[in-house]
Length: 211
Image (cartoon, rainbow, N blue to C red; front, side, top):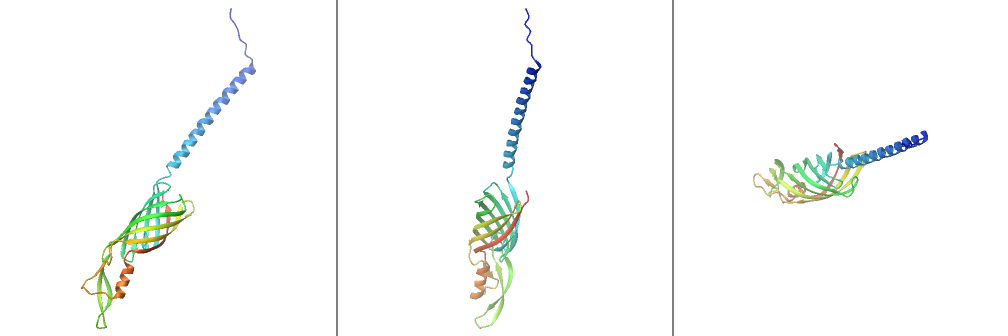
């Protein structure tokens, strides 16, 4: 004997509605999961970042006038390099930077700078007899270890203005020579010591994000 089960139209509609709700909930769950995954991937893909900058100062990273490039590896650590003109000729710098905050605030900086020097500087040198003599001085290569703090301000969406303070430790002393063997006066020697890389670091610069 066959048994026939009667299903009302209302029960069928309720069953279809329940399926729709379950299917919609599943779709929303999957979309939310995919969105969360995309956010995580975007945050991960924020690094590395690359900045190009311009700077000026004394015994700073770029010299009296120069350019720099900074590769920000993560929220805290950046690698950077710079080239420019200083009181000792061309200046080349490399270094590492540790940011206390991701954007803005203070940074610790450790770097190395090298200046190849140049030849043929003309100077008037006093003689023991009381007169003066023009001599030629060659600037020899000089290098420093740089310890500095940067104060950073975020400009716009991704650009940075900074002030650099610190001290450049000279790795050599008296990096000059006279072509004729003349002995420099105290004044001329003091001028050369002031110009030679090393001493108080004071600088400022601006960097804009390339990618």
